[in-house]
Length: 453
Image (cartoon, rainbow, N blue to C red; front, side):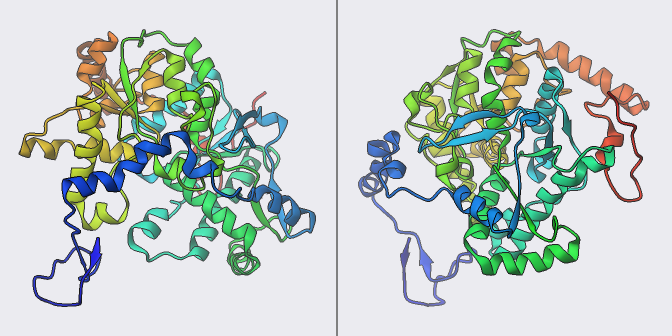
């Protein structure tokens, strides 16, 4: 975009200010402007060839040693597995005793996303807490409108993670029993960024501490900082071989493209997981790893690095840009270049954008109908989860029936089962993935449950 003199003539109301106008690049110039992605980014040179960045955990240990903070540690009881980040640093990924930090966008738009994750955990007998005492991370407001501020983001982050730390007390269990698992990529990136700011700024810690003290959210009068911030896709990645062992559907003939989410691996990139056995260690390992473990064909495509088009600000003020970007830069390429049967994501906004913006393309002859699923939804399907009860494919705007047919799933029979199930639900015969009494751990609605051995 290029800047122009302020004028009211021909002004466009875009939400970005009247001083901006389209750059109107020629096709050749536009190609030149993006060619660097395909030339170098595939070898991670944009990240690892720069000066080595600080591992914020070093500062965290020093602050704890000085008595300024308390660190919520991942302990042996969380059954951690060690992953490697882009610089080869160790990152602990807890696999048990997890506190689900849910996503507002998933619960509202893609309910089969978190349901698939809980279903898979139930198959493994994973201990977890899925309670209601959580707020949105508020990062969408911050990135989308600019109204939020760092103090509010940090206070929400620490408040939610403090709740994860103390939630088990309702069951008569010790503090720190559960470790938070973040469902949303936006929350994940935001929390990592905010944690870095908190560890580097005494002033921010001082301001936020005053807020947390009023909320009763300090530990021994100190801020509680998590040892690691863990995304659900990282849990799926570390559990991929166990997931593959429970696969009941052959997916070896499925051609899958993967969309890596900006907030998962471009935001605080030094914390993202890379694996030399996955795409030669050149790209973030999550999602691709579980698809390969399941036996699917992961197909490369030239615009893998591009954003999905969501972008926060322009999904609100320049929605046609979002739609055209999602279609032309992602969906079209995946269908025509990679002949993809499904595109796999690992973030709320990405899956929503790529799935729910395809319908508008029909108006201009761009009818691609590429199914968009989260990695955990595809994994649940491959493990035999019900495509409507659990994966809830009927919530998706883009059709999934052709994909299910190619996977050998009789979707018509499954749909009939689901419709019968809805009749039972209407009659009060409800099924739950999770004991609903455990969803409330405080307040007037709480009913204490006896601890079971």
